[in-house]
Picture: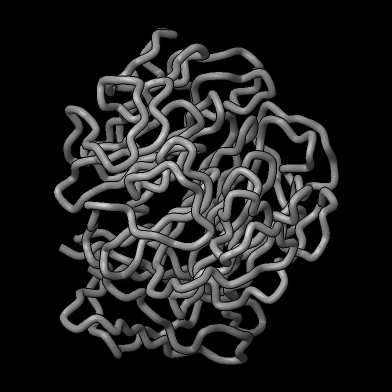
Amino acid sequence: MKSPQDRALFVLVSACLAFAGVSHANATQSVAAGLNHSLAIKPDGTLWSWGSGYSGQLGIGSTVDQWFPAQVNALTNVVAAAGGVYHSLAVKADGTVWAWGYNAYGQLGDGTTTQRNTSVQVGGLTNVIAVATGMYHSIALKSDGTVWGWGYNSSGQIGDGTTTNRVTPVQVSGLSGVSAIAAGQYFTIALKLDGTVWAWGYNGYCQFGNGTSNNSSVPVRAGGTISSVVTIAAGESHSVVLKTDGTVWGWGLNNYGQLGDGTTGTRCAPVQAIAVSNAIAVAAGQYHTLAVKMDGTVKAWGYNAQGQLGDGTNTNRSTPVVVSNLTGATSVSAGTDSVVLKTDGTVWSFGSNANGQLGNGTNANSNQPSAVVNLILSAQVATPSFSPEGGFYLQAQSVTVSCATAGATIRYTTDGSEPTAGSQIIASGASINIASVTFLRAKVW
C-alpha cells in the first residue's frame, strides 16, 4: 500500500490571471516526533512508538524508555498522530481522538487529570482530521474547519478567550476555514484555506510574528501580511511556514539560528531562511528547523549540540546546511532529534538519543542519519506536479497535472478542500483550464 501525496495551487484572478504559486504537502504525516519520543503509523493502521516513556507517552502500558519501536496498545485504524513533551494523541479513521501520557492539566481531554499509560478517548470530539500537541495542551482540527483545544491554558494557548485550564475540548473562538494546525510550547498556530496564518497563546518571544510580544487568548493574524502559506510548523518558541513558491519563512526565538536568516536575534516579523528553495515540507524541533526539498534532500538549521542537523558536526548553524547522506525524503518531524520518512517507506533519524528516541537500539547521540530499526512504512507515491508552476498571466491558463508514479490515481478539487476517494479523477498529463478564482488541489494514491 502506498501513502497518498497531495499538492495545491492558488489561482487568483483580478485584472489579470495570477498564479500565487504551487505547494507540495504530504497528505498524511505518517511519522510524528515529540520532544523525546516518536510515533509512526503503519499501513495497517497500527501505531508504533519509541523513545522516552517517563510519563506513559509511549502508550505501551508502562513508563520505561523504548530504544526501538513498540506497538501502542489497543489502537487500530490510526490515520494521524502527534507527540508532545509528555503526552501523545492519535486520530482514528472514524474521526475520534485518543490520548495517553501526562495529564496534570487535562491535556488528555478525558475529563480527568489522571496520567494514562494506555490510550483513552478524548471526550466529545468527532470528525477530527488532524491533531497537534504543545507542552501541556492539545489541539484538534475538525473536518468542518473548526479548531478545538484542551489542557493547560495559562497563556491562552487553547484559544477560547480565557486562561482557564480545560479537561475536555472547547472550541477555539472565532476561527473557521482552517486547513492545518501546529502547537509550540505555550502557543498555537493555524493555517487557513486562504493561505493566512493565525496564532494564540504565549507571545513573549514574538511567536506570532505580528510585531508585538503580547499574549492573546483568541486567534490573531500571525506573520504580519504573510500569505500564500501552505504548510506550518511550530518549535518550542518559533514558528515556521512554507509558502507556495517553495520558500521557507520564520519568526520568534532565534537564539540558536533556528530561523535560518544568518542571525541569532529574536524576530518579531517574518524572515526568509537563506538559500532554501523548492521546499515541499517543513518541521520545527525544539530549537532547530528542517525542510525537505523537491529533489528529496533535506536542509537543516539551528541548534546542533546533539547532531540534530545531521551534517556530521555538532556546530549550531544560523544558515541552512544539507543533511548528510540522505536522499529520497518525503516528510520530516522534529523534537530534540530529527525524523525523516523516505519514499521507500524507511524512517531515518539523527540528533539527541538519551531516551532511545532515534529508534536504533542505542542511546548514543548521532550527528548523521541512521535507520529506525524494524520499521518500514508504506512506500510513498510521487508528489503530483503542476505546469505552469506559477506567475502572473493576462489570460486564462491550462494547468497540466502529472505524477511520476506509474499507475497512480490523481483526484482533484477546485475549492481548496482536500481531495477524497470521491473527488474527480484526472489522468496524469491531462490539463485543467483555469479562468477564474480557483484553489486547485490534487492528491495521488
